[in-house]
Image (cartoon, rainbow over all chains, first blue to last red; front, side, top):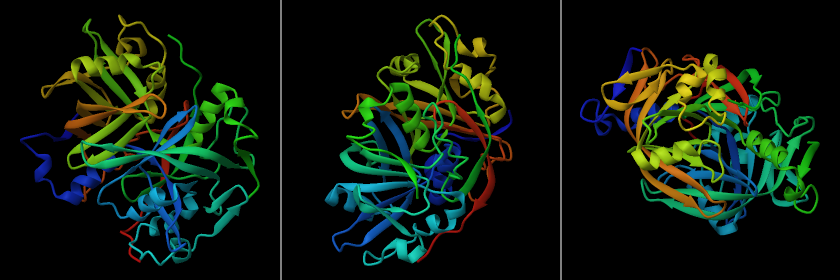
Length: 207
Length: 207
């Protein structure tokens, strides 16, 4: 395969323009989940921020992980998570991508991104914080721990799943949630939104 | 929104069948990257295993993270990573999904999954371990650290990117790698493979 190569000493990492390198590494590392995290700040304002650095940490107990950068725009989310200890995590539909993306703008703490970008709150009796209306998968989570990664100063928030809501008809017989059928989007890098197509489920592999 | 609800005390997590719950949480948590990790064991056999629990940890320095479960099938990969300290990470094309999926079968340590599933090794002068032929994004990585997550006994392998290879024509002017154009696949849950479509890149958001 003929390829572009980035190696130490040659296209040295440190010599690449910062944004260019961030775009390269982020996009090359794969398609990511697309979620909105809703938290509440000390002014009782509902914060909303888009994230793709989400990882499935485990199913027993159900745990999600979200990575926070030291210098990231959505620092409000981490502050609120630490203060209030809770959040909602909402899977974004492709048709809501513009509103979701717009939450990444640097709004002041007095402004709720719900109102600024035009997404509706959905309240449920089980949880004090709002979910995002129209999101077909909604998680109510508690901050279980914050794991610092010495390698680069990021922190992995370990989120305990308390409630999970999946839109009617979204769960198949074996527990599988067909996100593509629910029009959930995926993101590649910082700004490239996709629909998923060509579903192919493969059977359990044996040698 | 009418929805299926999973909550403590009701559809209690612990009461759900284990595989069903794993399928639910894994698939609901979003579209994931699809990569093959190649490592070498003490018998000099090239191991190959498919992973979706990959996260972009940072771009400066370039770091990837891969989550390992205590009881996961591809434990060989973690053992080899710890012993040899290196691996290759290869983005899987949609057309190679069957072969990639087949690496999740429990092959003996004496068997190379490259040979068992019919994927070809691609050797490069810069790195002692093989890459996967045909994979349009290939990373050469070193194990930087292994971060234990007390919450569930998993471990996050922090991987330092040494070399990155991207197929000719895959990088755009701003550093963005268009994975969909390179036919890189994404996976939803344990076994649902997708092509990404309907690309929409959005501009930097301002309030």
